[in-house]
Amino acid sequence: MAVAHVLVILTLLGDGQLSAAFVNTDSQAACEQRSAAIAAVLERGGAEVQQMRCVPSELRFTRFSHADAATAPRNAYRVTLGETVLALEPMPDVAQCEAAARSAQTPAGSSGFCVTSTQQLTQ
Image 1: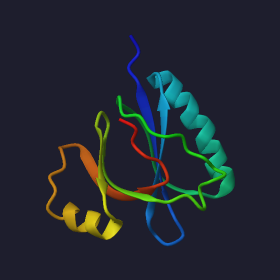
Image 2: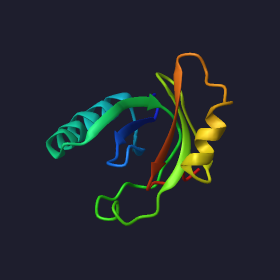
Image 3: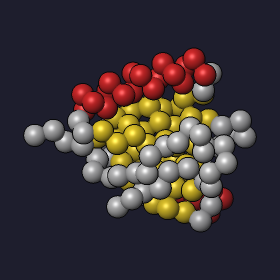
């Protein structure tokens, strides 16, 4: 049975802030296929991709909309990301995320990031 995967894309915005985009897929193979297609688009667009990886996860996100990306409200999250770990904690803003991150425990083999995203967690 295929395990759902989330493609996590972290890009650097012009102001130095990390932006996160999340793509829900049904399997590792589907995630890798989407990753290759999206990576090509981002490369052509000159995006500063910091990380792009497929992670097994049942988390679900609202769809990313290119049309609304520039004007949509941005949500702040503390993201924990590893080979098999994806966790999100909604935060009031990036400054409070960074303050909380200084004392947060991150699982071994994972990294923590303060990001903004136009997407929301749906579950």
